[in-house]
Amino acid sequence: MDAELFPRSRREIAPGAVHLPDWLDAGRQRLLLEDCRSWARPPAGLRTVRTPGGGTMTSRQVCLGLHWYPYGYARTVVDGDGSPVKAFPDELGELARAAAVDALGGNVSGADGPAYDIALINFYDADARMGMHRDSDESSDAPVVSLSLGDTCVFRFGNTQSRTRPYTDVELRSGDLFVFGGASRLAFHGVPRVHGGTAPPELGLTGRLNVTLRVSGF
Picture 1 (cartoon, rainbow, N blue to C red):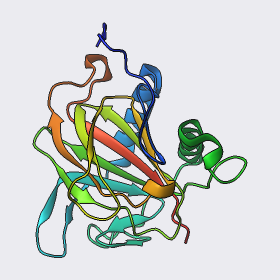
Picture 2 (tube, rainbow, N blue to C red):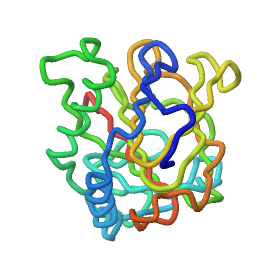
Picture 3 (cartoon, rainbow, N blue to C red):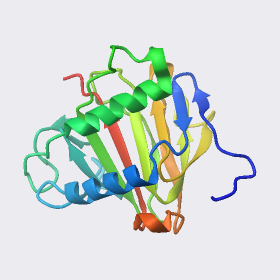
């Protein structure tokens, strides 16, 4: 919005969970979108994720570094075209470390932050959702870094014990950063709603991209 009645500012949602609005400027958003479009092309491109119970996720996904599938990691797209997963770019790791340090400061281990090596990139159209889940398939407890591009969504950030209340709903817009680590590293979270048609027109994206960056610890 051009004029905010209450300007958005940094907010700690829970211990170790921080929302930083507008962390990516317009130019950086466009560059990241161009990269995402390249990564989404086959081989090892954007795919529909199928759950062990036979269902499908409504968001679609592409992975870098290691390929995530329910519920583990592989070096090839074992639930897709079988191709080797695309490499994790160094510059994406640098972006993730900077994001973690900006959000959590001295609470991030290591002088330069942890060595990020996995990206899960989810594409949401206006009808897509993500149920409450935990990011628990990694061997590292390093903070998860989440970057939003395109349409605004409702991001539901919960507790570490169950998928139910208490939780906090956060509005994530294009360019926003959300980081969660420490006591909140294994909190349940999800996306109950995407507000279609809310992406910045100059970005040229219909839908929402979520770039989630993690440390595998493998």
